Length: 328
Image (cartoon, rainbow, N blue to C red):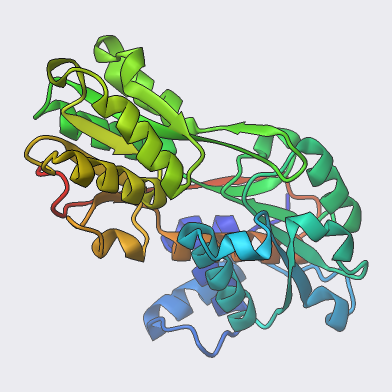
């Protein structure tokens, strides 16, 4: 059985991205001489060899596919951050990148060595992408069951941690979740909603779970719906699926004269830069987009150098950042 980058990373106690960049002699990688030597020694002990299957020029040309149209990407810092970090990681690894947006999949060059697709894709879209290059990695979409590599945040762990922290202080906890669709119209459910319901257990109240579309406008509207409930029958704390909806929810609370967090606590998901600058600054579940990007590039590099790998899913943990919208 062929030795993989994951085998080396596990034995060395470092990330896949670090192993990949050391073995590819990345001059921009900041790693100690001891760690570099350890990785190289383990690779030698395991008789690791790269299997190059394409000529040099083709092997270094990859496409980054963003599932949002270009203008919409500018309104979502989460996906924008992933794309920018994928570009940085890929270029640092010596890969030539081209970005294509999911509403223009036909523009993907036919000589593409590999594809990193960011976001949510229908089975038909995945088939279209893999027809161009079987070396396909999806970031932020769980497609392992469909036979593709993927990197996903630990939605369940992050939501469970935040829900338990809120339940330790509040009896009534609600959520504003999201619902979206792929660019070819296939609905995508929010895994955070099911994770929240599971974490709440017997304390879950259906009327306190609202579903928007991840926009500021929908965050505003869904919070208004919660505020329409009698004070004694509405949540004392609310989890919100992203920072953009949280911004709209905060506006609804301010307009209604509801003090945050004294009268209603808020925790958002993603923890993009805007979370720090809203009023009050958001307590948030941070998704490490830089790490997700690095893992995605490392998986693709592994695909480009090692034959016949089984599909892999990498789950990246989240971090709860305490600010002023919820006192935990």
